[in-house]
Length: 313
Ligand code: SAM
Ligand code: DTB
Ligand code: SF4
Image: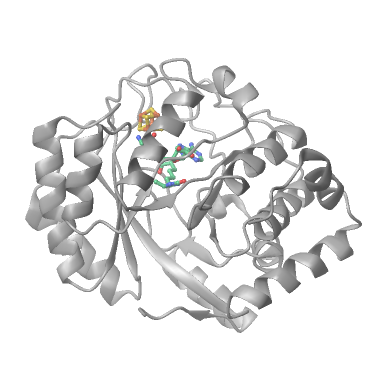
């Protein structure tokens, strides 16, 4: 594994745009089929009322937003949603819960969901907040493929966004997930007022994990009324694309997922992101609580680009 320095990453980020895209495409083509996109579908299995204060999040109990709180969903409802996702062509089903961390009784219920969803022939991913060692082990035993837990931004900028937990807490859970033998899905958000230096530092932390995360979601902030980031911050679209390209170069074998915020992006910006190395998206009307592009629009864009959905291995 190459250990990347900040200087080398910055130099790459600052290449002339065309050279950066050429380099990212080269890395992409060495490691993946160039026109294939992995498709995941999200479901919020427990919504709102979260004790954490992530400044971007509509589900935090600290802010007054339009999100309606709900209890953990019933198993049969989750399975029905997973079947629909599979029929729509998704290969991975990601279940998210707005917890600081699950209770042991929650874990048992989520493990049931993982078993049932997996038995449909879908890959499984959950994101439940901080985990204890034995909880990660139980999820692994249930057959969980991926755990999503984002570092979100650079270590330096983290405390400007969240104060109810630390960056080190995040790394601690990621280590537990990895040690339990679950694949890691870890990325971040752009558009919270961070600089390009913060973006590069975030990617460096991911790149220097050994092994690197198998899946790297890059979210663009969806500014949610009622949250501290309701007015968001501007991200230069070309800097956004540069960040994706750097992710592709630094994380050559990872799936780079263009995650939240696609609904607010033009087809052209999304196309540049694919060109820069994106090879995964969330597909379906909704993310967790926010809207995602209509499936028909995604099908249309992929077709216009000559891209195809990746089939289950
Ligand atoms: N509660 C769990 C946790 O924090 O790990 C999982 C759910 S949380 C919603 C997963 C990720 O979604 C966050 O880490 C963040 O990157 C992203 N996210 C949340 N709200 C967002 C927003 N308004 N815009 C863009 N991304 C967002
Ligand atoms: C990730 O990085 N993005 C997804 C997934 N992991 C769980 C969630 C996006 C959430 C967007 C805001 C919402 O729908 O509430
Ligand atoms: Fe809770 Fe996750 Fe939202 Fe933070 S991002 S407030 S931990 S649901």
